[in-house]
Length: 313
Image (cartoon, rainbow, N blue to C red; front, side, top):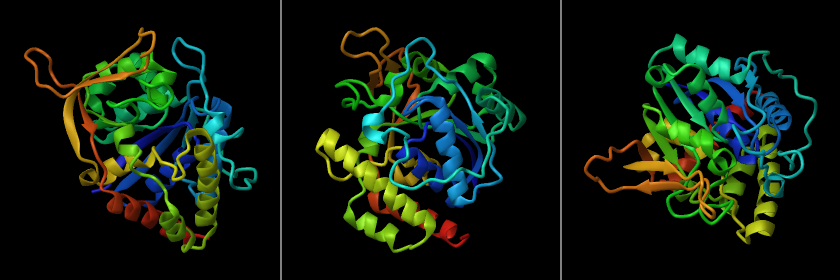
């Protein structure tokens, strides 16, 4: 059975790949796309979501803009990885898709409350929209099917030595999300760094020879160059599609139960997702944590998701 998801995102190159995967795989029904400030400002992340929807012919999925800043901190963006507009590598035209007037938080609340047990929230950017939705309507914690997020790490960060970007941008929001009584899965850097796009993957996508595949290769080539300059790593990790893959095919992402708490005040560790896999008396597990990735299955899923979209052009 296809799983209904709301994809909460901040496009961003790897967010674009997650949108395409969610749209193109039959195991997932993309019910809505909501945007948040993160990789870039809300104006740009929303524009980029609309660009990807136009590219892929996504015309029946509402796109709603959400929170323009973290709960209490100044916004930190990532132009050093995603460029000045967030989706360099492809020549974008004015998108035909348009955002709906609803605020993302209202859309999340309304859809979850209207469909108890059906909606999986898949936040792949900072968790601001999800935290505000929970504060606005706490009952969504008992109505949502689950939350599968891309973010966090239990072995070290990517924006600081301790913190992963999505959690670092709005750690207060992340603390609210981890503290809520809903089923939560953290797909962190231990999983997503395994999803590195090497030359064989580029060749497989290029072989589809469609407007979508050509745009994907262009975006990934830019993303590759940025990563190489910033990190010295030549094969860029496509972080965000890993969360969608976990929803579509849970067997691709082995997980362990853990207790996770977000550090808010550490001088060197703010935004760290402190993860304890030990079963200690009086400390209940509050999350499942991704620990690996079945790489061949992941790339087969992603590349297969692009092929049906190619046939629409």
